[in-house]
Length: 450
Image 1 (cartoon, rainbow, N blue to C red):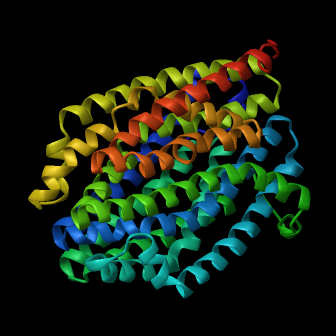
Image 2: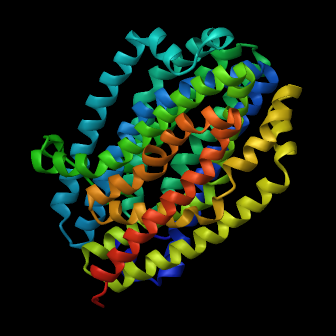
């Protein structure tokens, strides 16, 4: 592998650079999403459709704790990208050391609390009726591995901030492949059921952590931290917190969304509707991988060039990222509008679930072609260190629009109202984000520097 330097972020052509950054990110997200997708198929076919709903109950809790690591990672990586762009290597090292300490302290504490209050948390997130027992099995085991997942998510963003997307891609691929292999062994061969699915997931988190630890100890990383860098620096912690809170708030809203969705759908249609949502949610994770890859590839490019005051390149990166992401989102839209029923049948043989899910899927993805503006717009403000607008724009879709809509629309349209809330919130949040992004480009990035 050719040696890659963070300085490439400020010199290579934007189109080529975005592809170089986004393709490994997309592949990594694809493999991770395929892992979640195939994992759900395995569980549905080998354990049962209720097991799919059980995992859907657990994921928002475990992912929220893991998102602490992602939040610290993205917040700190924004600082690291800009510090490397401004050749402030000491700050980059201190930031990374602080990221490690914060991730360990917070995620271990949260995992312990999550285990102490397991029963009440599972019920709150929709783990009712036949869903409760398999959800508790999965939840308890997976939470043991969540701190490792948090460290992986934090480390992955730092690797990308260094301008080494291929290593970040491998970090996402390794646990995904290992999880699928362990799923097959534990569920299909050894017949461990939900215990097998949970242990396969937890062990794969540890394998991922081992790889990321190797990367930072190897010659490939520019960030060679020492013991003094682990000492928490209040100003760095505040900066990490203000920027990372954007990601944490987004994941918190995602978790709250799952809470509302699982409970509302359980009341409207029981386990079948919760399972239908679980399948659609997996497709949201999987189908959007190329768009999310563009967004991930865009972050270090925008952050580095903003830190170097090269605003022309920042503008160009915004336009190029939106163009590429919109094209890919449109392709996703076409596929899911044409083939929702065959996709549903991959997950389950339950005829009622197969009957309900395709219509829901079409509603959920109806506004997909326009969402690139919202994703790239919110990512821009986070990349350049503008925490408040990044937070507000990140929360527009699910926090300001989607949650109120799923509380209001079902009163008039029943279960259909739940699915209608998806495209309506997509359109509204895109309009808001587009307005603020356009204003920012006109005011802040109008000077042609660099």
